[in-house]
Length: 421
Image 1 (tube, rainbow, N blue to C red):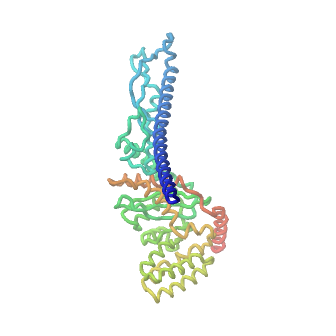
Image 2: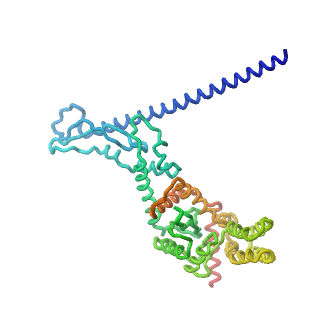
């Protein structure tokens, strides 16, 4: 009897579970269907409101229907089917017509011309595409309504081109004379498979991050770096011997900066890139020790301590791998620049690596261009690069420890004046 009772209880639990799952499925279906109906209803109400606004705008011009006003030359002239941009899509609306009886021609309604302006549609398309919707899937991503006419792939593509071109011009032509930067990060990003966009990101005195612009080339060569610097200076950006440059260690970047500012240019090398380079030369059993020693250089408070750790690591590498020794020796004093300048400890974490610009690339150009299947030409590459940089720019936050920047810069300037006498 007890065994039979256990079997019956187990069967009832199974039936209850099946019933619960069925209820969940049915409820989910009802909610989904209800959501679509609510969205459709709200859109219909909104479009009806737009239609009423158009009618009211015609009333302001022509007066009330059937009103006898002999002073008015403008008369109502029925309706004509048309399309307008509403809510990031094209919809079908009845256009109220107005005719100038005296002159014998039709008059445009200002409110209708406003709905014909594609700027808001372009903005809606641009924001959706930079968030990850491809041009091919744009129409399917919209909540369609009964009066929605849909948007074609070509229409979406043209809208994005118009908006991205505006961002491109804004990024590459804006005046930089008002930006007071104390540090600049320069790095390259591969865009479109065969090109490299060399980008510059500035740290300002109030802790803001400002993308300055980019220069398209095939590699991170010194010529392309110098072309980027010349373009920034042409637009008013001020760089001198006191500007700190943070790079990943590419030879072209270093040569370009030294050719432009001389051998005494302030360069800080990225520790993560240097560690990756060392790991390429060292056997896996030495990787942990190499990381530990390199980070001791990074975390040193004073320059003398950092140089001592550097000498210790060079001596250790010389007996293990000569190539790794030469790689670290090549970085030289670029790994101890922050200690030599006395950069406050909280600010150093933004300068140890090129993570600031890598984060900008990840949330900007790489995200915006991930759905592109075919790269056609240089303008297309530059449009996506500019759109991505602008999108990342809108999500930047201030640097940690930004309140210490101005006092440190003032102290640094005073120390330079004392040295020069």
